Length: 477
Image (cartoon, rainbow, N blue to C red; front, top):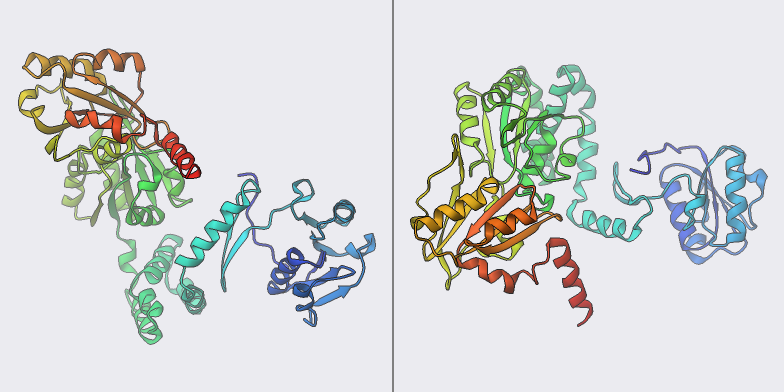
């Protein structure tokens, strides 16, 4: 983060705007909307600017500014688009301790003006730190489309309860939960649906005697984070990540996912790798129970889907036995995500009419699977936790009679920008994987569907490369 995001109180303060065109007019509109005293300098202002004249807090000077005009100024905007006016403006603004912003001149900017979505009193500001302003404008348009105008009125409505909530709901955690339940629960839904009377009644009931007791009860949420790409996270998973008090996460979580967790939530790494356990399984379960007893909302964030080789069922058995509410949020499992990202369909009418998921690793090492039953014609085998055993799996399958020519793929870091795919056959996949030295997490796919990768994976490109190839193809149309 190159810039500190803040909202500045400018009500009753002097703001200087140099310029009379469209850019200057936008600056003036924002400043007036925030209650500032605005002084505009331009000898020949355009129509958009002159429409603003007459506002009680706007003064127009039909000239360029001089140094004395910056006395007692809080913010100075350079919007003349004239380099000869920009340099002295910045110099004079700094001489009078004012914050300066000159349009399209990063060296003359103490701050960056973000793209703004306004739902008074709710304001959402979006910035790319000056790197790509167009992206900020595109995101603003998307937020505008998805955020109902009623959210501003909802914020005003709920603000009337602020003092009562502070008096009646004791403790910061309890108050935060009350607000979240009020906004995202039945009361908020009723208000957004236009029934303000029902919303008031529901809030009054929650504020009544004993209405906050349920807020002190701990909960455990088991959430699947998907195979790695943050864009594959579900909306429900994201919502619960934003509400958790503490997050227990494992090593399979994709880069950037923890950035989506509520900023003040506690984060605890409980990840496990083969032969290297940050925390033993029984200790993880005990910790979840301990935190829930403290009244916290505990989020167990697991890669892929928590109920497909994620040991989610084992973790929740004891938690549920202790009487705590548990919620399970499914995630896109690694098999589906890695297969799609690598261009390998798990089923296909001409290749595989069934698919089976197995784990290679048991408590005592490599599991003795019946590979003739698994790797048979018309079926795809997806092997979890098999990176250390690729050669052994291939040797065992061939020893049991599976054809050495059976296609095999190993997908390393599937769905992520670092994805690598190694393809071969049972006869040579061990050597190929050893040469590639993948770091994991990885998934093994066995079956004739692997042969379709040459057609569907855009010449074996990783997700980032494939996207760039798609853009190039579009530009060539």
